[in-house]
Amino acid sequence: MVLRGKENAMKQITEALYFIPGQDDMIPDSHVYLIGRPESKDLTIVDAGLMGKGQYKIESIRKAGIRLTDIKRVVMTHTHLDHIGCLGEIFQAIPDAELWVHRAEALLLEEGDERAVYGMDMFQSMCQAQYGIRPGAFTFQVHRKLEGGGETLDLGGTAWEVLHIPGHSEGSIGLYNHQDKILIPGDTVYADYAIGRFDLYGASGAQLKDSLMELSKLEVDILLPGHNRIVEAVPPGYILETARQWEPYLS
Image (cartoon, rainbow, N blue to C red; front, side, top):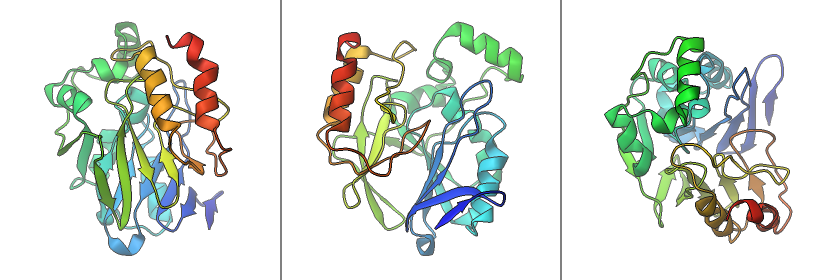
């Protein structure tokens, strides 16, 4: 079932998983994934996107016939600006939704510490001036602090393992569905043998290498990254080969 085109940008990947492509601006806008069987009335948004993109994401969901009141939470793969920028807009439309974030970045959000949002001081100054963002705009209550390490989430009748995969950021997580072999890795690994940057606040090339090696142990048929194209037929050994290509730069 494809809902892409003039009327809607949202694509159905499985009966319990939808994809809303990001709309890149001067800064990339992250993809959004919607998890859960519609009849469960217990749906989850994964990531939000860039400032000003909230209405596009919300309208894409509405046009698919999904009620906003059925969305119970937003899970963040990490809290960089291109993923969390329109979270406030999402919560205006879905005020009762909870926010779930890995503990390492959840504590920063609750304290109004925006280093993990902007990544570097120069980028923070530029974005605040360009977009008129006030200091402290990304202070949020986090309702559930994710840990990883075998933690499993029941999201609308589907089971997703939480994987703590630091490197791109300190609190980066992936979500893995064993049944359909689906991986949502945030910005840790992309299509076309690309990986996320590792020069921002809380990032680490060595940790990113370790995280890629951990992901390479998974059977992945569908790769749903935070940006660029999704891959619905992942070649065997793809993540391991990606890790090997980047290994000299991640030591």
